[in-house]
Image (tube, rainbow, N blue to C red; front, side, top):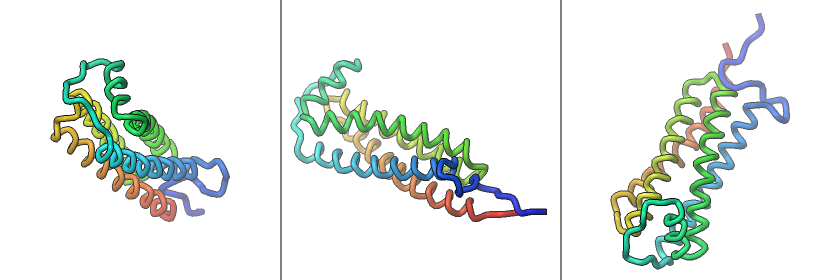
Amino acid sequence: MAPTQVGLNDMSGRDSPARNLRISIVVTLAALTAQGWSGDSVNLFSQFPNSTVQHSFTDLWLALSTGGPIATYHGIEGLALVALSFLTLLLSFKSSKSKSVRITSVLATIAIVSAAIGGVLFVFSGFQDNGVSSQMGTSFIAAYALYFTELYYTKVSNLSRV
């Protein structure tokens, strides 16, 4: 009987699900890197008013815009990262039977959503609540580590054969 793959589908095709998953992970990691840089820039160089923000989508974007274009970019990219994380999660379940790949993808998505929640709550606090700022940063680091781990597991599970 011929060996069968346990982990990811065959990588030989240009549009294979495994290849698409890896591309999605790498794009997410690149976006996380840019998000980290823009977050540092916002933290160091943006000035925000010392007042709370009403809990509405419009007021959220108005508050971000007071910090300038980098703060606005940071918020938009945060939304894009949430979408990318769900795409990567979907691809991980579609292209892999590996529990390691799937679990790290679920955890990375949770970390991205946690970072987004922390970011929104930080804006709603008038950029004053250091606890949710810490949540945003810690969740970002967790997501970064988990996506690198998932990328590793996609390679390892692709080599596994029965």
